[in-house]
Image 1 (cartoon, helix red, strand yellow):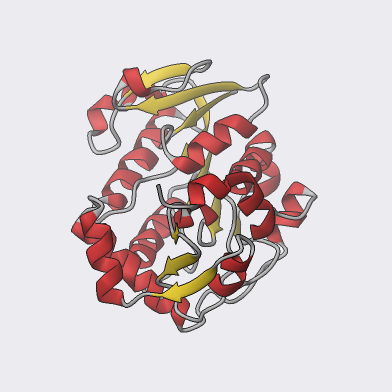
Image 2: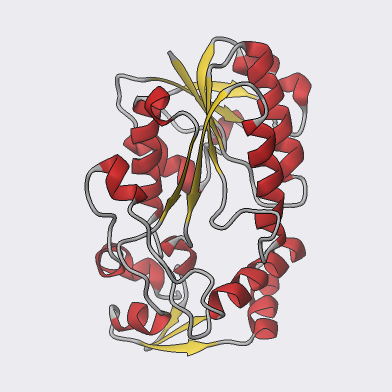
Length: 273
């Protein structure tokens, strides 16, 4: 019952690997084996290159499918689903994006909708997870006594990536029980960055779209990713993410971590160096 984990070196899949049972047979897909996590079987392959996936998918029962944000994401997801079908994978657990749909206010959400629909039509058993804005996205956002952000005055159901990992692990422990389900997972409360900043004894200062874009480019982010992040910021500022759902508690059996809990655990990383 091998589980193949894609996106294995990223924030969410790293959290997932930490949440999976040590009794589970886990294989990770990486492009560079020198960067692979320890303690698991390693397969070398690239979702952008289908020929590299044949051996990596051989013997896999369940696929955790996470693709990097970008205009090529549907291509990578398509290759993974095709390789899964060819290899006889039974179930695909796909991490999508909150609000993914053909009418989503971001290009990322519309691209995820394409991949979600392709998976649903694949003939494979599937589960789709749509997480809210990651709390980890706020790392480095506090300078001195001020938190800077591009969510305007909007409230958002922020979620800790560790909780996404716990949720994914719960689904992977018994994927058949979650077949055909789409989950939107949030934190326990929808809060503004004013509230988030107060958890750190700071105040919140909204930044303009242009200033946020320039800062992301200056930090080395790709132009496409920075522009899409601004699209998300615009949507959240308008209240698009102001809700919570019961899905996390339903599956995991406990409340997700609050931002106050997250801030206690990660205060040093939230503050800019």
